[in-house]
Length: 74
Image (tube, rainbow, N blue to C red):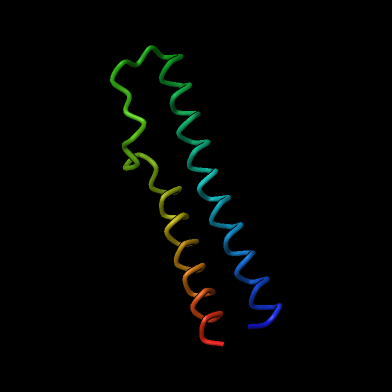
């Protein structure tokens, strides 16, 4: 385990958290828009409507997994 490996893992964790926060912000924005437009059947739990955000989370998660694997191998 080296300082560089730890720094890489830290960067990947931060990136994943940023992607999760972006999804949460998109959900909040959609909720606000739904209230403004008086939409009554809005479901915030359906992440199907956020493909870009969930895809970015999956990618960041995969990159974090790879960084952690390199850390464990050392």
